[in-house]
Image (cartoon, rainbow, N blue to C red; front, side):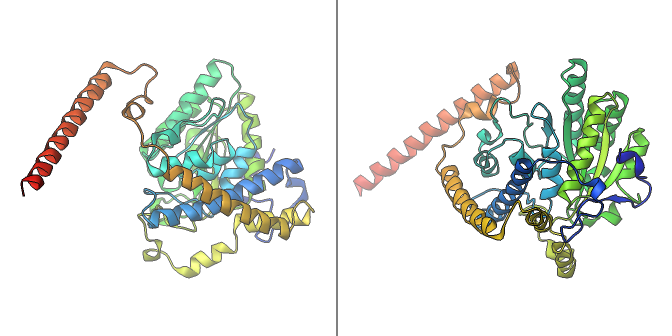
Amino acid sequence: MIISKYDPLKKQQFQVLDADGNIVNPKDEPNIDDKTLINMYKTMKLARHADIKALQYQRQGRMLTYAPVQGQEAAQIGPMAALEPKDWLAPAFREFAAMLYRGATLEQLYLYWYGNEIGSKFADGVNILPINIPIGSQINHAVGLAYASKIQNKNQVVVTYIGDGGTSHGEFYEGMNFAAVLNAPMIAIIQNNQYAISTPRAKATRAETLAQKALAFGIPGIQVDGNDVLAMYAIVKEAAERARKGEGPTLIEAFTYRLGPHTTSDDPTIYRKDEEVEEWKKKDPIKRFKTYLINKKLWSYEQDRELDEQYEQLITETFKRVENSDNPTIDEVFDYTFVNIPQDLIDQKEKYMKYLKRAFLSSLKETSKANQSLKEK
């Protein structure tokens, strides 16, 4: 077992691949079949391409506020590959890559950031909760799912994410405490991308590591190289096995870096230096994983170029469909919160429909007056 060998109080970081894509310790290399390895890499690449294009679309005024994931693909794809289809993902708002791997389509995710409610409607069997914006709420959602799995004997594991800044929020502590007390089959992954928006991690907490916060809950915690997809896979695989055996939750700190802005409303050049970003680019999770696959004779530079071209075309075609999609209906705005809509929401919906009808009739009347005025002139 790896997790028990690492002390979360110390800056011990579990790693399988170094920054150059070489195996650090052959004993730690997880046993992953070739098909899964290729799927992991392709999804990381799709997430990177789609992320860059999403930022461009937003800057062009064609998409709403977006939270980039560039640089954090390994922290998301590794854990998702380690799960079983029956398991759940309770995302925050930056889990673009994780959601792609778990079965959300690119079109659905683009629809969400485009402002269309249908972007949160996943197919049956795709066990993903909708994107969660309030900081930390997803922890409690995950605990609820995990506890339900436990009492119903479904043997499902729930993975949830939070940022380094989010670990200073109350709901993180409340949710993690409940997970520990209930011995819930849950894995919480802290994506420590070094900044809580513009606040450096060192100014947000005095803790030596974020993994050590697990000790307060009485559960295991470990810091992992979050840019190492194999390390993330190995640790989540072990944590999931613990959870299925009834050994409770695990807290994992993925030590990574956000290469882009916090959201499209942010300008990171104000609070961090270009030199820092360039240093982290040398630890790019996709670059090191590609080297690993090429060394294993599972991938080639030619295949990589072809994949880049394929994804560029796919993304362009997908966003065209998103831009040509129908606007959300009033039903879609109201109907996806409760199984049975409560009366107060029914009343709000009826009131809003009457308002829209009045506004429409008023608009028609004003248009008619304007046309009549033009005729008289």
